Image 1 (cartoon, rainbow, N blue to C red):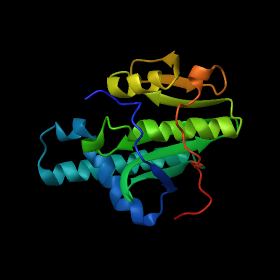
Image 2 (image 1 turned 30 degrees about the vertical axis):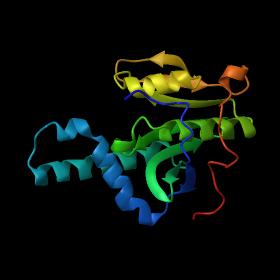
Image 3 (image 1 turned 180 degrees about the vertical axis):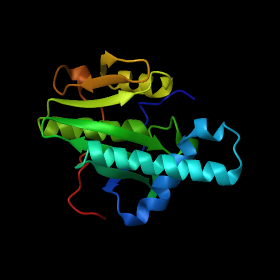
Image 4 (image 1 turned 30 degrees about the horizontal axis):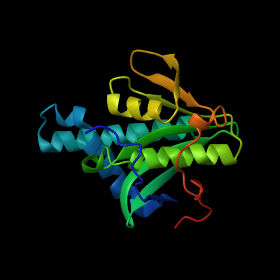
Length: 185
Protein backbone atom coordinates (compact mmCIF):
# COMPACT_ATOMS: atom_id res chain seq x y z
CA UNK A 1 0.00 0.00 0.00
CA UNK A 2 1.54 3.36 -0.98
CA UNK A 3 1.94 6.06 1.60
CA UNK A 4 -0.96 8.48 1.63
CA UNK A 5 0.42 11.91 2.46
CA UNK A 6 -2.83 13.58 1.49
CA UNK A 7 -4.82 11.66 4.06
CA UNK A 8 -6.36 13.86 6.69
CA UNK A 9 -5.90 11.28 9.42
CA UNK A 10 -7.46 12.78 12.56
CA UNK A 11 -4.52 12.61 14.92
CA UNK A 12 -4.08 14.11 18.34
CA UNK A 13 -0.71 13.83 20.05
CA UNK A 14 0.15 13.79 23.70
CA UNK A 15 3.28 13.19 25.70
CA UNK A 16 3.83 9.58 26.66
CA UNK A 17 3.50 8.54 30.27
CA UNK A 18 4.41 5.37 32.20
CA UNK A 19 1.08 3.75 31.33
CA UNK A 20 2.21 3.72 27.67
CA UNK A 21 5.13 1.33 28.31
CA UNK A 22 3.27 -1.78 27.16
CA UNK A 23 1.99 -0.05 24.00
CA UNK A 24 5.46 1.29 23.14
CA UNK A 25 7.08 -2.13 23.55
CA UNK A 26 4.32 -3.88 21.58
CA UNK A 27 4.67 -1.29 18.80
CA UNK A 28 8.44 -1.82 18.69
CA UNK A 29 8.00 -5.61 18.62
CA UNK A 30 5.33 -5.49 15.91
CA UNK A 31 7.58 -3.41 13.65
CA UNK A 32 10.65 -5.67 14.09
CA UNK A 33 9.76 -7.87 11.14
CA UNK A 34 13.44 -8.68 10.60
CA UNK A 35 13.57 -10.37 14.02
CA UNK A 36 10.30 -12.23 13.48
CA UNK A 37 11.71 -13.55 10.18
CA UNK A 38 14.46 -15.40 12.06
CA UNK A 39 12.00 -18.13 12.98
CA UNK A 40 13.15 -18.29 16.60
CA UNK A 41 11.17 -20.12 19.26
CA UNK A 42 8.71 -17.78 20.99
CA UNK A 43 10.72 -17.52 24.23
CA UNK A 44 13.94 -16.71 22.36
CA UNK A 45 12.19 -14.15 20.15
CA UNK A 46 10.57 -12.50 23.16
CA UNK A 47 13.95 -12.29 24.93
CA UNK A 48 15.63 -10.85 21.83
CA UNK A 49 12.89 -8.26 21.35
CA UNK A 50 13.10 -7.21 25.01
CA UNK A 51 16.88 -6.92 24.79
CA UNK A 52 16.82 -4.94 21.54
CA UNK A 53 14.15 -2.60 22.90
CA UNK A 54 16.15 -1.97 26.08
CA UNK A 55 19.32 -1.30 24.05
CA UNK A 56 17.49 1.10 21.75
CA UNK A 57 15.87 3.00 24.61
CA UNK A 58 19.22 3.32 26.42
CA UNK A 59 20.87 4.56 23.22
CA UNK A 60 18.15 7.17 22.64
CA UNK A 61 18.40 8.38 26.26
CA UNK A 62 22.18 8.70 25.88
CA UNK A 63 22.13 10.51 22.53
CA UNK A 64 18.94 12.54 22.97
CA UNK A 65 18.51 13.07 26.72
CA UNK A 66 15.85 15.78 26.35
CA UNK A 67 13.84 14.03 23.62
CA UNK A 68 10.12 13.65 24.14
CA UNK A 69 8.08 10.63 23.19
CA UNK A 70 4.74 11.53 21.69
CA UNK A 71 1.81 9.19 21.31
CA UNK A 72 -0.56 9.67 18.37
CA UNK A 73 -4.18 8.95 19.11
CA UNK A 74 -7.04 8.27 16.72
CA UNK A 75 -10.34 8.27 18.56
CA UNK A 76 -8.34 8.16 21.81
CA UNK A 77 -6.65 4.89 20.76
CA UNK A 78 -2.83 4.87 20.44
CA UNK A 79 -1.88 4.35 16.79
CA UNK A 80 1.71 5.60 16.58
CA UNK A 81 4.63 7.06 18.45
CA UNK A 82 7.27 9.61 17.60
CA UNK A 83 10.39 10.61 19.48
CA UNK A 84 11.41 14.24 18.88
CA UNK A 85 14.53 16.00 20.12
CA UNK A 86 14.63 19.82 20.23
CA UNK A 87 18.17 21.16 20.39
CA UNK A 88 17.03 24.79 20.24
CA UNK A 89 18.07 25.16 16.60
CA UNK A 90 16.41 22.18 14.95
CA UNK A 91 13.82 19.56 15.70
CA UNK A 92 15.17 16.05 15.14
CA UNK A 93 12.77 13.20 14.54
CA UNK A 94 14.55 10.35 16.31
CA UNK A 95 11.98 7.64 15.62
CA UNK A 96 8.52 7.17 14.15
CA UNK A 97 6.49 3.98 14.39
CA UNK A 98 2.91 3.26 13.38
CA UNK A 99 0.83 0.21 14.31
CA UNK A 100 1.50 -2.11 11.31
CA UNK A 101 -2.13 -2.62 10.17
CA UNK A 102 -2.39 1.18 9.96
CA UNK A 103 0.71 1.75 7.80
CA UNK A 104 0.00 3.94 4.80
CA UNK A 105 -3.11 5.59 6.23
CA UNK A 106 -1.55 8.97 6.94
CA UNK A 107 -0.79 8.75 10.66
CA UNK A 108 2.98 9.04 10.21
CA UNK A 109 2.53 11.87 7.72
CA UNK A 110 0.23 13.71 10.13
CA UNK A 111 2.80 13.47 12.92
CA UNK A 112 5.64 14.66 10.67
CA UNK A 113 3.48 17.59 9.52
CA UNK A 114 2.90 18.52 13.15
CA UNK A 115 6.67 18.60 13.72
CA UNK A 116 7.11 20.71 10.59
CA UNK A 117 4.44 23.14 11.78
CA UNK A 118 6.07 23.32 15.21
CA UNK A 119 9.45 24.06 13.63
CA UNK A 120 7.88 26.80 11.54
CA UNK A 121 6.10 28.36 14.56
CA UNK A 122 9.21 28.15 16.75
CA UNK A 123 11.45 29.48 13.97
CA UNK A 124 13.74 26.44 14.00
CA UNK A 125 16.26 26.20 11.20
CA UNK A 126 15.25 22.69 10.22
CA UNK A 127 13.60 19.39 10.94
CA UNK A 128 16.07 16.54 10.59
CA UNK A 129 15.83 12.76 10.60
CA UNK A 130 17.65 9.63 9.51
CA UNK A 131 16.02 6.92 7.40
CA UNK A 132 17.05 3.45 6.27
CA UNK A 133 17.30 3.76 2.46
CA UNK A 134 15.77 0.27 2.19
CA UNK A 135 12.59 1.62 3.81
CA UNK A 136 11.14 2.89 0.57
CA UNK A 137 7.74 3.76 2.05
CA UNK A 138 9.32 6.09 4.63
CA UNK A 139 11.73 7.54 2.08
CA UNK A 140 8.88 8.37 -0.33
CA UNK A 141 6.91 9.93 2.52
CA UNK A 142 9.76 12.19 3.63
CA UNK A 143 10.53 13.28 0.07
CA UNK A 144 6.85 14.02 -0.54
CA UNK A 145 6.79 16.14 2.64
CA UNK A 146 9.65 18.29 1.34
CA UNK A 147 12.66 16.68 3.02
CA UNK A 148 15.95 16.66 1.14
CA UNK A 149 18.74 14.13 1.44
CA UNK A 150 21.77 15.82 2.99
CA UNK A 151 24.03 12.83 3.62
CA UNK A 152 24.03 9.21 2.49
CA UNK A 153 25.52 6.11 4.06
CA UNK A 154 24.77 2.48 3.22
CA UNK A 155 22.53 1.96 6.28
CA UNK A 156 20.98 5.40 6.73
CA UNK A 157 20.36 8.64 4.93
CA UNK A 158 20.20 11.93 6.79
CA UNK A 159 17.42 14.21 5.60
CA UNK A 160 16.37 17.76 6.42
CA UNK A 161 13.41 20.03 5.88
CA UNK A 162 13.82 23.81 6.16
CA UNK A 163 10.77 25.90 7.07
CA UNK A 164 9.91 28.81 4.86
CA UNK A 165 12.22 27.95 2.00
CA UNK A 166 9.27 27.87 -0.40
CA UNK A 167 5.54 27.39 -0.25
CA UNK A 168 6.09 23.77 -1.27
CA UNK A 169 8.16 23.22 1.87
CA UNK A 170 5.35 24.24 4.19
CA UNK A 171 3.20 21.46 5.54
CA UNK A 172 -0.18 21.41 3.81
CA UNK A 173 -2.16 20.53 6.90
CA UNK A 174 -0.49 20.61 10.25
CA UNK A 175 -3.31 21.53 12.59
CA UNK A 176 -3.19 24.04 15.41
CA UNK A 177 -1.82 21.74 18.13
CA UNK A 178 1.70 21.95 19.46
CA UNK A 179 3.58 18.68 19.30
CA UNK A 180 5.01 19.56 22.68
CA UNK A 181 1.90 19.77 24.85
CA UNK A 182 2.24 21.48 28.18
CA UNK A 183 0.42 18.74 30.07
CA UNK A 184 1.06 15.03 30.22
CA UNK A 185 -2.48 13.88 29.65
